[in-house]
Length: 160
Image 1 (cartoon, one colour):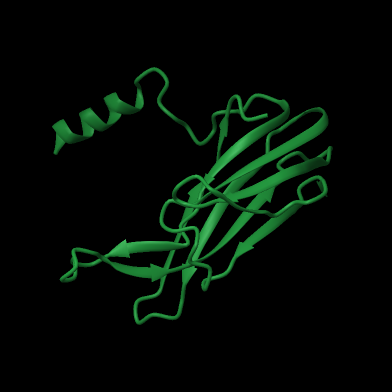
Image 2: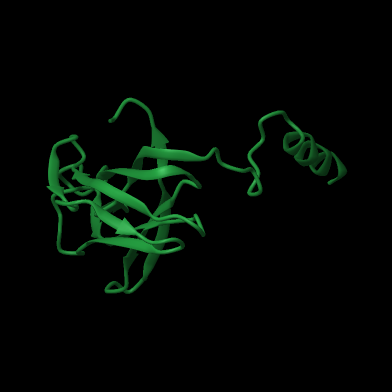
């Protein structure tokens, strides 16, 4: 028990260990990659060698974490598992006020995205601000075993 505790403490002390308190660098804009699951594969393989598929709805939320300045979402492209763009959700720049949010919704019945779907969201600001927090909440309440989980966006370079 003591050995496990010491290993845990040693891992936390490693240089570069992630912290919930770690500040983000201010930015005037980024491209953010967000994994989205319009379905999850589960269970055993059937006679054709394929797993069961569970459709999910997904709510992608772009949350402005800056208390003083607005940001603009200039693009929110939805891609399928093969990297094919399915839809542009933001056809004109959308302003997100300080501490506001922009929600993008994928219906449960949408099956084109697949288990490897994603969003590439581009945002800009007039001055350097706290970058937005971007997450996707995946939900299915229609089955006997309700399912809900989140995924988080991460900035990517070279997508401008």
